[in-house]
Image (cartoon, rainbow over the protein chains, first blue to last red):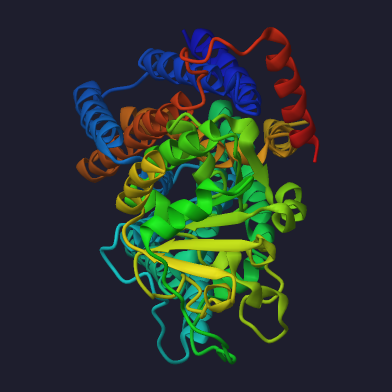
Length: 451
Length: 116
């Protein structure tokens, strides 16, 4: 029986890696996650055959509660809320790793101190991922402010708390006191919360990705502690992949991981002088401007996602293409809340992905574009990023300011996540079209039809 | 070589595997990929089940019970979210006009994307 279980875990690990590999192409991605899904179900069922186990009633009850609750909420949630769902499920994985460690530490029978140290390390990382992900979820869901939450001496306090947590973890190695175990977990959980609170909403994708890597590592370490190769392989693969993904995301935002974690982005920054004024445009004029263009570049951002405007955007693009106008989409690496966020939404609306261009490919095209239409994007099109001293300095941006004309669809006059005034909006060839993206685009379709 | 060392080598190889597998993924799949890898560490469920299966005291049972709930939610929720995202990348049947050649050149364009 033990061999059957181990053989299944072996196959599971192989299918997970193959599945991840298949996710590297849009054509095979879905089958990739399905392979991994089958492996997960088989591994879960086979685990019931592990020799010498009890508590089956509790196990099945817990399985049912977790699976049904998560499945239903994942199916019901809107596509725009996906990032926080990733955060919360990831946090639960970290919590599960922490729970494994807690039980093992209470039992206290480890083969070696080295294995116990890995269990403690996994518990620390998993607990931080758990409480941190919950805070990230709360911020993205709007339950708490997305602004960085700060207090005096925060960094020193956080460092001291981390040091105390590590010290408690070290104390656990030779001892077995329940009180120390409790204190250790309490300190680790508190550190996760305090680590995430000062980080602004704009940096959340990087943080979620980092916690994803954390949970992977924690799962890998607990795999060592309980001698389960499937956990070691799957956890470590995710830990490595997640770390790489985190660095890629941070790089795309021109933020070092360190500066993200120190937090406080967009607070008390020198704003600089912004010249010019905001010039509104009405719908009919915007429609005419678009209808007589030859080339239009669409720049979607988080505002489009919030308004669920991707379908209306597609209708506008269709109407323009009917007039033989070339329509291209410029996708900033961190437009929306996560890399690829815009691609997912536009794919949902049926936009072919060969019309979507990355930053390096589309930037040389802007000077040839008659109109660039910005939908709910802000910081990623702010030319202030080219100017030294701006808080955005150095972030790669889409050169919308180089287009012959720009139309900015925006709900109001608020600032972007970075809290920086957008110089593009004040430029001579920029016109502001205020309103909810979905409504505005819907009216644009009507106006275009009448022309 | 004892089993701890063998496990450390597994760790090393798995880390490189994770790194290599991801470095080939085009940007447009980064969000689904994060979600997909989030699902894969849902395997922690299996570990939580084994731990609950061996729990003796009520406290151990309680923590193990919580662990299985959390692990199951990670696996089930992670799968459902990833599946929903990737569903959208399926080719729409409404576009049969795309020739086999067009498909091929698209695939090539993507490989180039991935290489960059």
